[in-house]
Image 1 (cartoon, rainbow, N blue to C red):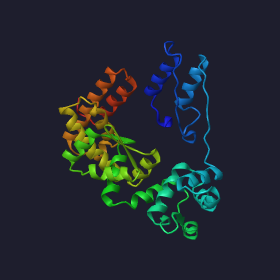
Image 2 (image 1 turned 135 degrees about the vertical axis):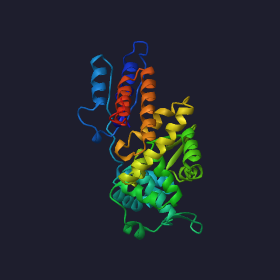
Image 3 (image 1 turned 60 degrees about the vertical axis):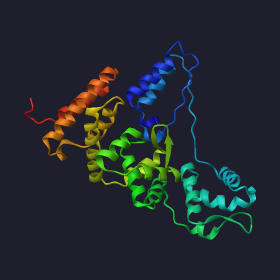
Image 4 (image 1 turned 120 degrees about the horizontal axis):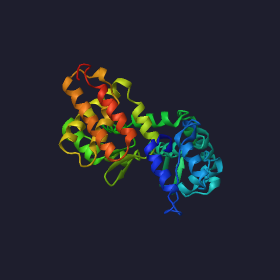
Length: 309
């Protein structure tokens, strides 16, 4: 996801690549170049390291071809490729070889009984006519959104909540949301992980793919997003004033800063957000991330009353 990389992170990568003490350092990154302009910082980083003699190479990954899709399905169903060829043709036509779309469609076919194990035939079987006539969106994002909508409301809402925090969420944040906001997330997130929408990591959860996060976030309208960011951010700001050993202040201001002063009418809340941005800016300065610090300070000023000074 280098298309979303911030300048501070790219600066660290550049320093590592140029450091004479690490001549055997290998960096592998991935990105969607159709979401990056010619002036994207990643290309500037690539040009900088090349000028100093660092070898770089770009691999362009295209969609999976028809034969590869057939090999995958043949291996998955433990059947000869000649038996799965027609099914693979249908799947490839509907997904255009998109790996994520392909895997989620196969899961959906299994959940809807169109792909099932036959005990009498002792092998996997499918309804070719129904699969061929199945109406599927022409975009993986729309397909994922529909898959999320088909989940129970509590699981779907939990995924939308997680999507407000980006690609992942820390257990400490979940604890605050459950204790201070009154959300019930743990069981729903466990179920979503079982269904393949999330992955469990040591200290939290992350989306199994960034397109899943996008699909969940896009299910919220702009007003609902703003309300959620504000509600979650205020709870985290309050908690961060009591204990900030794990850097929760950055998560907190990351939420409230996605709203605006115009939707906040409480002077106490505006003061809390301004103070939190000030603390985040000071903390960023201590980490030598001066660009982020400046943004926090400027955003904190935005939430102050005009006569505050």
